[in-house]
Image 1 (cartoon, helix red, strand yellow):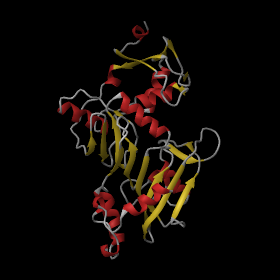
Image 2: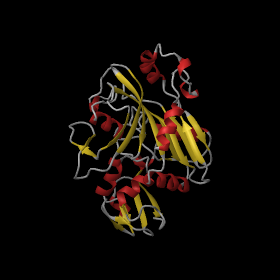
Image 3: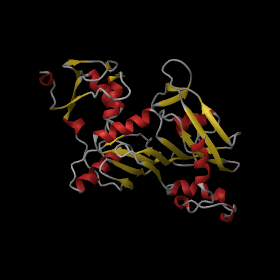
Image 4: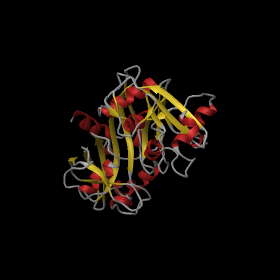
Length: 339
């Protein structure tokens, strides 16, 4: 009956909230964010405003708590449901019947949003499966900012999605980044523990460090791998996964990322100098330990190479994924993992 109130054609997605889903109880908007990661937050909030989300036959607000066993109906306009395939180069590091791990190139959005309908990572993934004749429509599990490069896990079925989402929620998914910041941090190994929340900005979404209100716990660990007078190369481990967390925390201690115009970084680089280098997790279906890393993109290699000239590769072991760089990430990866 609800469908006839809409002028556009509507697709109805119906499902039951599994009683063993963790964590429950959970706000409906947060559940939908996890179940439909390819949808932007604005798209999902619009569904609630237009009363397109029904639980047990009745429309609900975004804050309605799900406890398991409810029948949920989501009414999606046709133009929101369709994500056109786009022939964009896709770097795949691992794939099986349950998950896909890709190395996202810099300067690519995660999924269509607003007036942008193509040219995103999700468009590229849909093209990849369409070309194979495979009807799979995977869901994005993680988010990287448009200008951040590196590793992402994509779920190809509901079991994989739920298993990976649980690891993300419990922070058992191990994530390590390469970053280049302005200046030299005082501490060669540091731990930033500072709550974060959204702050006012006239044109762009911006996060900041503050306590109270809607702020959430945020923890970031870093190691200075090499530095000059102008910038430092860091290995960074996330202990929580807040939006813009590394960018905000490094700016908070006075060392914003090179190229990060939103948080005060030196504009001499075309994007924030951040790369998702390593992921460690248990396979959501088989339980196998997965350890994957992605090579530094060329623009980051060119950024840091001048500062490393003269160090001499004979003083350092080389990592196969960073063959042009005179350091061995395994040394500090092991250190970060054991801490």
